[in-house]
Length: 470
Image (cartoon, rainbow, N blue to C red; front, top):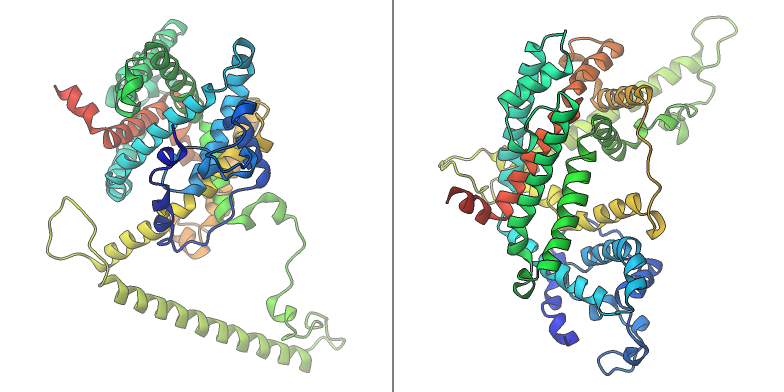
């Protein structure tokens, strides 16, 4: 296929980036680009020039060598890198021993490009705001309510098995039937889970694969096996349901938002007071007076500290007042959020929240750095990271305790003292640890993960629900 044909629609990318207000962080690097070209753009010596320009393949940019995956070059770069790493580690390591076929990588990239463009078009028609604000919170609320009922009514004599049985009775699902109370039932439940993953992939693949590849049984079986067994069943429903992994994920997320909460920063020397740092206070303010009374320096120091603290409070209050006034003024001009509830009056604060979600949370500029972080975490230096050993029971308790600590420390003192109805931080930690037990069971967590997968699949592929109803 000609390059001009393959790059159709590439010129529309830049316009989609201009509306982003988030500063762009460079997510490309020459080493990774060379790696992508070596794996995905390998050609025989006769094809070393491209498109009649006389330029070597290594000299051409990626957007002239590979088909577009999405409408963003930055996102495409990260996806190219992930595809190259997976092909290099898991496919070409054995495929190259069978045949010297150089077109295999190109065919794989072409198929993936068709699927990603299809998914992007479908994603544009999904009401992400409604899903984030309405459907997912309702799903979480129903799940947590069922967990609370199961934990309340479970007998202490049966422990975890009773919780699982009661919860599955309240929130049944065919993929998680029967309750894995014995080794035989665990095997049967795993078979049903694999069958559900396979059925979901079998329904989705015909909707995303190119028309000429739908009737290819070999390709269909290979792609379906990889997606259902390796990705959906073992990774998403398997590893992602582990309680310690969820606790660790919450901890790392708070670390990213509040870096000062990292443990290694707590042992550092106390920070120099800002007023002292800029020379606004005397460095000898803490030295005791030889006569034991209040010296003139201490009185002056106290007055100076009070004066600067007063200015800080006044400045902060003025900034908050100005931000609130500006937000309310702009909120009246923002378009109303699409909702199923038809109402003539719309709360200005709700419109402001909708605008913030669209401009901050759903900002396309956030996707390339996120994909880059995922790639570097899974494949540091474009290589497979060593497998992590499951934590011991003691390490699991330490992970949960650290998660509780950062949650409590991330809440402002004024808020947490009233929320927990105590000033004792240890009691707060204990209360949060008990709440974290709501996601402490792998089998119960699988119900939530499968429900989220089904919700996303139905929103992206409405044909699935229509076929089920027929």
